Image (cartoon, rainbow, N blue to C red; front, top):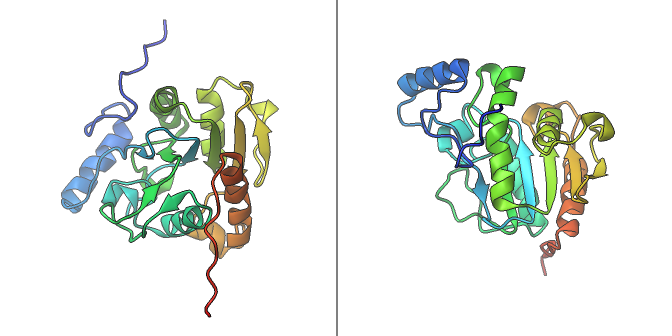
Length: 225
């Protein structure tokens, strides 16, 4: 019999389920005692129309600040785009106590703890998937935007979908078995943008279509008078 789902959508601060990640977390707590250094919880609107799923916390980003995509380049691009597409408000300042708020959006990671070299193992991805599934069951989003293939595959597995039916591709749009739309994007990492794998225009196109699907209104561009 499979183990029942936990009664919470986020793992506890000292989650022991992945020994390698727990050991790395302990090392970081000794090296950087002022950092968050714990499984990073989902963040955003508690009644989201759109769930954005990333890979895992960055060492000096979310692992340091405790909020998804906060404190590194990936967050700079993600939140800039969400603000532009009407999915966020306020000012993003790379810290969890800034004025940024998300509108109709929640952000979660497929793996909640920072992995060494930003590379979770297959076993760690599977182990942490229970928290992604509980997040979905708790908050019931209407649409999904995944950032990268690992997030894509983990989300499909959490939802019980057959991966071969929904191949990952940047800009792809799928309809899941329950009718919910799924949008694919390359991850908004500095590596992908520096190498040209992902441009800001490419990212804005996908996020913009997801925003339109859930009824968000892009922020008007104000030209100088």
